[in-house]
Each structure stands twice: as C-alpha cells, then as structure tokens.
Length: 283
Image 1 (cartoon, one colour):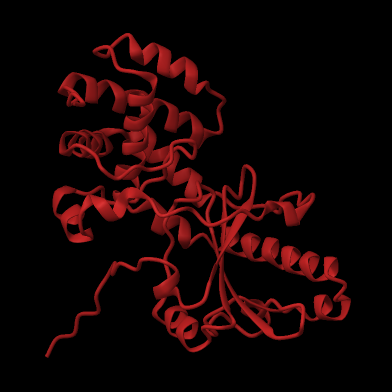
Image 2 (cartoon, rainbow, N blue to C red; image 1 turned 90 degrees about the vertical axis):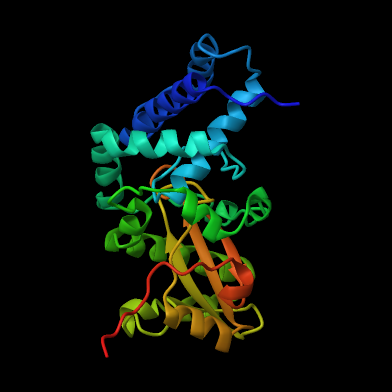
C-alpha cells in the first residue's frame, strides 16, 4: 500500500516544482533529472516514479488554480488535500512566480518559423484520470482560498497570442489543401475573424478536400496541451448548429514549439464544459 507523503515531503516537492516552473516561465534552462536527484535526498525513500507522479499532481492543482504548469509533467488529478493546501498557500506568497506568470501570459506573441507545418499536428490528449477524481464541485470546494488572478484566463485575453495562433492555423490549412492538390480551395481559405469580425463563432473558413466548408475556431496557449481553454456561449451555440462542419484547433506551446490538435463537432461533446461565471440581474 502506498504511503502518504508527510507534510515535510509535500513542502519539499512543491518547493522543487515551483523552482522549475519559475525557470520555465522565465525561459531559463534547467534539468528535471538534476532537480529530482537533489529532491530525493530530502524524501523518505521515494522512487523516481513516485516523485514524477507527485509533480504531475502539482500540475493538476495549478490548473485548478488558474496557473500555468510545467509542460513535461502531465496533470494527474488524484491528489492529497495536503498537496492542494501546500500549493495554494505557496501561491499566496510567491511574488516571484506571480510576476513571472504575469509577464509570460501578457507578453506580445510573434510569428514563428513554420517549417514542415503539417507535422505539427498531434492527436488530442487522452482522457485523464480526472473523471475518477470526483465532481468539479468537489474540486471547487476543496481548493480555497484561490489566488486573485486566473493566469490561464488572462492569457486567453492576449490578443496578439490569439492572432498569431490564428495565422498559424491559416498556414496549416493552406498547406493541408495544397498537399491534397486543392490549390483553388487553398486560395479561398478566409481569416473571417479579421475580414468579417469576431462575432461569427469561428475564426477561419476553410474547406474539406471535396469542397465542403470547414469552420474553425482557434484557441492558442503558450503552455502545455492539457491547458484548459475558454469558449463563449456564441462559440458553443455555433458549434452545435454547425456540428458537421465545426472544428476547434487547439494550438499549444506556441512560443517554444507550436503544435496543434483538433476537436471535431459540437464543443459540448468534444470536451467537458464547466461554468466559470454567471450573469446576475437585479429585479
């Protein structure tokens, strides 16, 4: 039977993770292996796999708190309350990480070298163990107090990042159609959020190889592919009405090594939606 981690061990692993995350947000090089070896000296005979799993738990907690996570540690959602408390307490006082996160999500995005852009597509993330970890409400109830800023939501409002992601997908779509020998369709791919405004519920009008419309909504992050994204009520409605033609392109790790995956059809079927705010009326 797995041994629970002590309060000292939890504090040590959180401190180690935050040190790595700070370097990653600043664009500094570091070695995960060297960090793990130094950390092991402070722990009660924990295996490398156990340490890696705890780091992945911290990624999950950070996402719940609206913070970026270390892309190399895929979030694992079954974690100790003690760990969530330690991460939350650290976020309340770690001003260096706060400044680095703010700078990272607000930074102006620049065009990236596309290279073989068609090779940038990956399969969507597999279903995680989150479904087994309890309801969203249970997670909500156990993660208080929350930091004052949701940096994932703040990044989603970075207009330069959104625009660069859309241009990346434009190039991808044109390359996809050109590879299929559909030059005329490639020329007709339209960046509708620019040419017609952003109220259509999608950003790009592209085409299937046989000529049917492909309506594309683009969501871009500089962080890992498990980073959650935000959708509007209009985007959800259009995805349902245009189910057969609608596709969400998730661009991730944009600043370091841009990649994308595609979710097809209505957003309420393609992903799990959670309410993030409510409209309140008086009277």
